[in-house]
Image: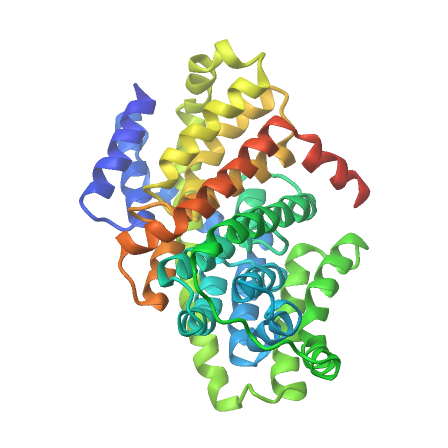
Length: 425
């Protein structure tokens, strides 16, 4: 009954258009009243505890790093680098988008930021070169969700903090799956781009390639610093985020000199606004998380799923289906914050590796960014591509299917994630 009260109140409040953070608080209050232990002091204490978490400090720094990248000229140099090497191939601008998505993923960890930055530059170029607008915007959107998989990853930080799982291990676990997503998009693009009569970009000379590489050197060095520092134990994920922000600031101000001091205030404000949304969600989710534990909702869910507890694959398939369905209606961060406290006890009791589950869970949630009606990344790509939701759905579905296939493969073959992870430790 408590599970029904929590889910029913949460969905009911959301149905009235209440923002997710406040919906979490209201559903928490309703559950407290149902359990007969309403206490404003407990409510306030859990709100403070939800935001007062050192690992969560990585989020504002990575968000700031992403904003500094765009303002400091790092983003456009990465695109120019990709253009120099694959832009001349048939359908080359699509391959540029995929390669740039992988490189961007090692910088910001935000699907929305990467999609907006790439889409604003590449979609107009692709359309003018004869590419189908819907398909181009769909590819940019699908490439955008690589960002939360390849480290650094903001959703993995949120999951790691909520589930008590090593964020460094989650980061390392995302490298191979992120590259597999890129490969799946490349294969799919090669097939679908045949329908377009495109104009190939001129092949760059060796000198132009060298110039593009030299110009992008400082941008390309950033993910190596982050991953190398984490792998070598030089800094924690939170410290890595601070290093990334400082590095992006230094490169934009001193090396590329495109980030002006008068622009810095605007960048800080945008980063602060985005951070405040995530942190309020984290604070509100702590109330729900505490109540979920008090009400023994995980125990009730374990009872419901008990027939599958001895069959890890069946359990993972059921959880994947649940998350895919939820992902069509909710964004990544609230879904992680709401479902993680409920699902982790089930996963732990079933003997599933929490790092492997975290990777699948985050990837599944990110796929939800491409599904209507919420589909945050889909909406961003549609906005920068200047097309409607119906049109971008026509363009994205081949890439969406390709990424779901990767999710299925990873679910069936955990060693794809776990074996490479051992190499990093």
